[in-house]
Length: 138
Image (tube, rainbow, N blue to C red; front, side):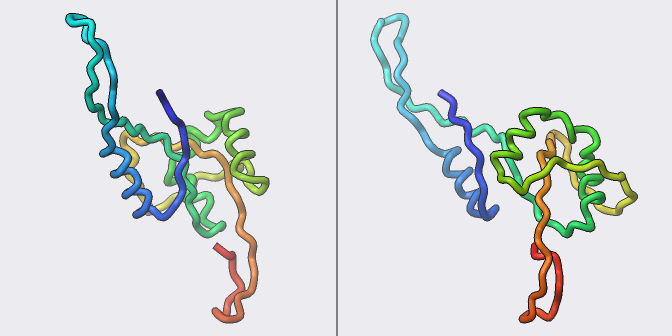
């Protein structure tokens, strides 16, 4: 049996959730072909990540973030599935726009990690008198 789900939350708590899910043992009934009898053994659940992430950053850094993630390689790979995911995430989530790859000193190791951009959502801008700034409300 396979159950597909997405997670969202504070990374530390998500990591604890993952650790706990990986440690669960389940009763598995199988028939012994030699004896013809059912046997019950323990089997570890297999947590296989298919992760959806939300990354928050200043809007003016969009081109740089997409450059670091090498999004040109995968930005349109999801096709209709990407559109369905954007719709599920909410009305404000839009398709990842065309962007310009820019020089950057940022690096994210992504060996053996696939990154599939789904969409973007802009934050409102506003004044925060208590902070003394008008800014993007990250």
